[in-house]
Image (tube, rainbow, N blue to C red; front, side):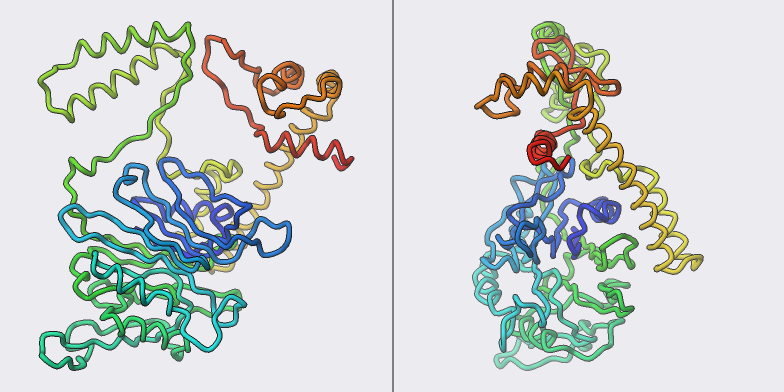
Length: 475
């Protein structure tokens, strides 16, 4: 699992976002800047759960304040559930079933800093968590994680000896829970509240414990050159043996990212049979011409299966038969499974960006570049890619909607003045043929054709925007 304060950069810092998903079953994100008018980026093989404030930062904007989200593999759909969402979008509780082990309840938190207009006045910002912790502690183990905007130096929560009749305070070093920290600045007011939260429920801060070397690293860097630790993992001491790995990444190289991500592994009690990894499946469009070929291929594949084989072997054999039959039915279609964890919206972020970012991270580690030099180099490349992508997009939109070839199609559209939805096939198909009859555009597939449907560069929203520009003369 990973937890990362993305600072609203899920779409801009694509490479760092993809890094948080490598070898990760569940990714958790804070300060997503999501609002009701915006969506989180689609990731192949994963599902989103999120909570955000309904109002954007400014009127007409699609950027919100705060917000938390969780991204988990589709195969975990039956094991991961959201059990509670804060009305002010400060935290979200999730439950993870772990087979024979106790269920795990995780609070993904983002609490705004003390100077924010969303911060409470004169009281602990973590008070809403108290009742939730008492309720969920009776059902399973608890972990609190995220950005708490609290600086705690190397202080540990107050630990009590629960084996005695009268509880007595125990020194952290006596029980192996002494912390180390690279952030040795003074404890802030939020830091005191955070330590009080852990002490009240018998929790300890996992950052900086000797069990996990490197977990004492800094987690946040500001533009003025300062750095701090404000992202934490906190939970019960009894859960420490079940956490196999806990690491903190280095300073990110990107556009808006200013927090490191925290990666940890928790022991799982499910067997391999219950938790089998699934691969992505290619999708095909069936037509009357290809259905017979496909059905014949499936039938022949089923004849080769041993009916007395184990269930897992039968499942794998059936999957191979289906793929082989589909490939024979569509010989010109490559049935490649999607790359798990790949963000598909940002087409400008290509392999050159990924390779450049990896090289810059290596050179920063070797001391060849400073972090600011590497970040400036990467920003120049991203700006160049975005300009080229936007120029290509605008050129294709112009040739599609405003070029000479489109006059006949727009004349047909204006004469009809459809009352049904613009993107419905009944309205669009007649003049779409003319709009697509432009060099460089893919041919428009016929609804009853014998070949698979091809995706087009334009979405319905692009079309609506272009028509809006035509109507108001801003094209």
